[in-house]
Amino acid sequence: MLVRTDLIGCYIVRMNALNDGYEFLQLRRAADDYMGGTWQTVAGCMEPGETAWQAALRELDEETGLTPQEFYRSGTFGSFYIPGPTTETDQLFHQVLFLAIVSREQRVKLNHEHDDYRWIAREKIRESFMWPEDRRILQHLCEDILDGGLAREYLRISDSLLGSSRAGSPGVGGRSETSGPAKGAGRSSSEET
Image (cartoon, rainbow, N blue to C red; front, top):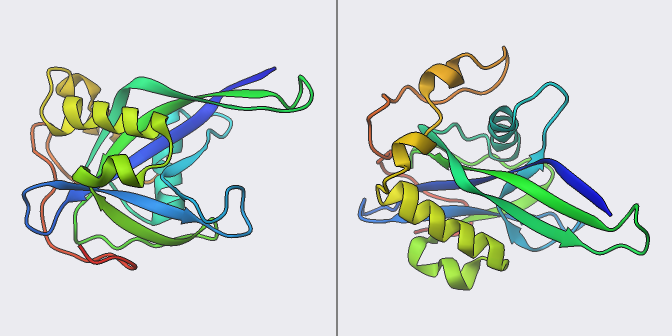
């Protein structure tokens, strides 16, 4: 069995139009890609010499064109298994997870991996995210970060660390260490909320 630990996942959240709740971004995989037509979140692999958080920011920029105002690591990891006929193709994946809080003013810019996007209200997570692992992780992110859990300040990736990122990596918006989630007004492409 091949065990991979070079994967990242990044969940993207913004305030809803009424500023009284959260909504999460989902991207639809392009039809000709693996699992084409399914709704997923940002995911990818670390490149050589890249940290997990740098990879998450890069993938976020490549797949959506978004820049977080606040950026957090998850207090848990994601795991999934893809069965294969041989020990070389039987794979277990461990994924480092992140949460990016973005403003409503930002516009999603899809790359070739996805053909549409939508924003899902927090209340619709259970019926909109197909993987049990995603639903479990989103519950944790909501409780521990968005709802101001005890670990929130320790899960935040500091602006000073993000500022020391290698040249050319996308950065994080100019929010202070103590500022709350981004708020504003905006629209999505395929689903108005």
